[in-house]
Image (cartoon, rainbow, N blue to C red):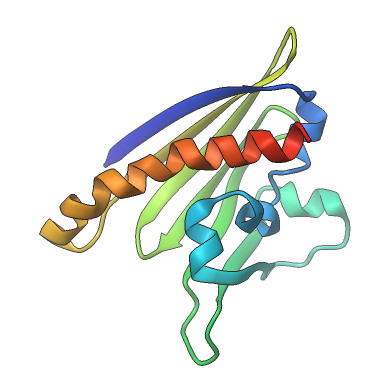
Length: 148
């Protein structure tokens, strides 16, 4: 399994950063989701906004093209409000994604940790550097949305 860990400071309190972490908001800032899916929709019952961030919540990526199969599925495995959320990702690659929020003087330090297995054998190894590059772009997108 490969691990990528990146951190960024955001001029927003942890509560505001937490509001961007529901699974259905990922396409707003994660580059790989923008191109691959039309939306992320919850497959578990969601009665309140808080339910979107609870352990056991599940969602799936809805493909852009009609007739295509679901791109990926996710399940929240850990959730500490305004502090940490972890979800398991199943799809083209399998992984565990964690967002850790720490209050700092000027806002929040967010650490983005992804443990994954790249598929496709040698082809996966060839495209892996492009995949890893997206993490920096994702954090910049996330920061720019919150600091507008």
